[in-house]
Image 1 (tube, helix red, strand yellow):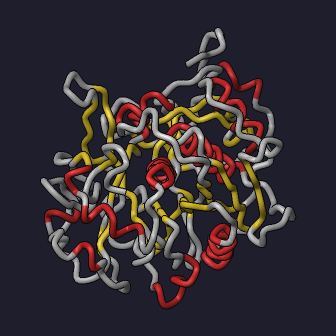
Image 2 (cartoon, helix red, strand yellow):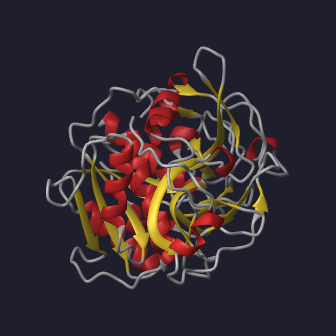
Length: 395
């Protein structure tokens, strides 16, 4: 792993370096541990639309903290925590679907991969591809919040699966119709093994939007949300996707070398509309219909991941620390690409291989009428699902 020998500085020092007007970041909220702050980077979604589930670490005034060198977990940590080191995907493609345009996506990806000594992933070498929601190059307008989301997604694929090819599909807006059209486009691209969706809106019915996400043979992942126990959120509440919750990840002096608890912000709940997964019948979810999550990965911004983004948002750009279930969804999508086992509906696979997951058994994301919907336990629970990857055997 190699870093530039540059002293890290805070966002306050970098203020003069980021003069482009950026989107307003919501007011900072204390993290689960109480000593750090974070804020969502995308607007709260309106009816019929979704918001990205990305949270950036901020100072106490809500300004994203940017530095000149990486801080937060990088590829070695992600691969160590989830026992993925040395695994390869044989060049399978992970697609990410996001709204609006990130004009610096490829350049920022190059900076991230160079900083960590990962092989280049570029348009020129065929590893990276970017399209609009129709498969063309008429990209939508730039949105600085969603640009940060895109950088988070690209970097998490790189961290988890360095040899994966990457497809970025940019939807014209954050409406479910446009995001869904982008998912359908991603599913038509040869080589796509997984499609990651780091966004969520209100619970919705598969009878309305399910055709966008119904792609047997491709692992479709979706963030469960960053608001704690809240009931179903779409598309994670779809019966066709793998719903991905979130954890707090810390190094530990144990055999694994890491420990995880439920992240207090991880979304969980029961859909009011969509059919329960047949594979989850023995999981005792307590939900009459679709329960989320299925599995999880690191999402707590207090134990967040390093991301590089040069499109200024709220006055900051550079290396930042991110969390949210926007981080966990592309991590799990990349694990599916590493496994290569995506026939049928991939969300069924972990339910048959629970012993090949790290069970998350402590922590809570709120209060709820049925304990396992919001409180960790042995086996399935709402915030962390069945657990986190222990290699790829469960996927």
